[in-house]
Length: 112
Length: 112
Image 1 (cartoon, rainbow over the protein chains, first blue to last red):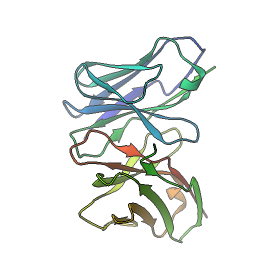
Image 2 (cartoon, rainbow over the protein chains, first blue to last red):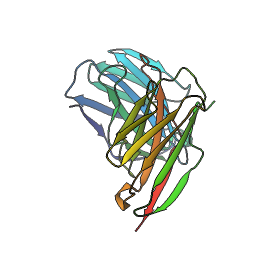
Image 3 (cartoon, rainbow over the protein chains, first blue to last red):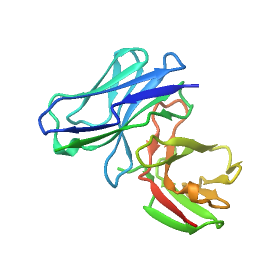
Image 4 (spheres, one colour):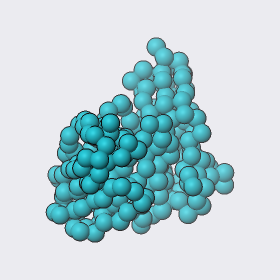
């Protein structure tokens, strides 16, 4: 079965600072990978997804970017954080289309 | 445009009684639906799913009902237990799609 490692668990960053969140997957190869954000009082918003190395699709124009330098590594980045970037960030993987997602444990990001 | 809606942000139920969580969708192309359960500071975990060729799927205390004509699905938990207290997300997709669209979640509180 798949295992997702996501870190850090919590992060407090000042406005204007850079961001790098990393997610790695074990137990499967060539997975589909996703970054979701859960903002306060809102549902799970899809930010980026990737069906292969260096193949990134962006769902929502914003201050963030994603990269997939290796098959089982997915990185969420920002050059300059905004207050509105605060939220709970979740990495997810999917073995193939039509399978459910496996989620990581999430990162609570607070931008101050 | 919220394609998947959970109109009840919260629900309280007495232990041992039935919990009914509702979800509505607008996209008639959706043909696969899932429910996820999420505890605070953790990633969501898969609970139960249903394909559009069925109108009911049961797994232990959890049953999902699908009404395609009304574009409505519901999750029934019987009997409810305090450990069921969590946020529940419904999600929908089209077979072959890489993306699940999540609702905004319903916070269930089961009172002992």
